[in-house]
Length: 102
Image 1 (cartoon, one colour):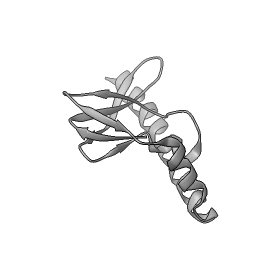
Image 2 (tube, one colour; image 1 turned 45 degrees about the vertical axis):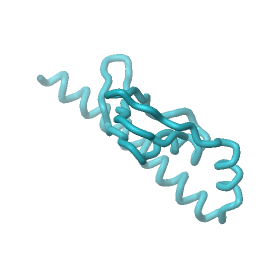
Image 3 (cartoon, helix red, strand yellow; image 1 turned 120 degrees about the vertical axis):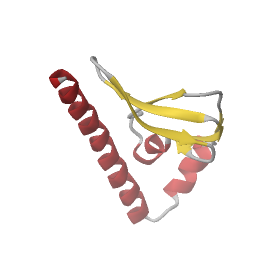
């Protein structure tokens, strides 16, 4: 997980035919948090849109802190993460359909 120190980081989803920006993280915002919550591979790629710097947060410590939270908190985080992953996939599918019609 990373925090954007300065600049702008584009978050992108891609498949074999296209790549779409789904959001842009700015100074003070986190990227890479979903993998911490659900232990799955990343759902998006990240690249600097402008000169940027990110700071890596200590995964091991964050994971330890997360495992000490109540079970219901972990379930909520995993559920929200799953819904975001599904939304990202739908977004890309719908974008591909629109691109084919154009």
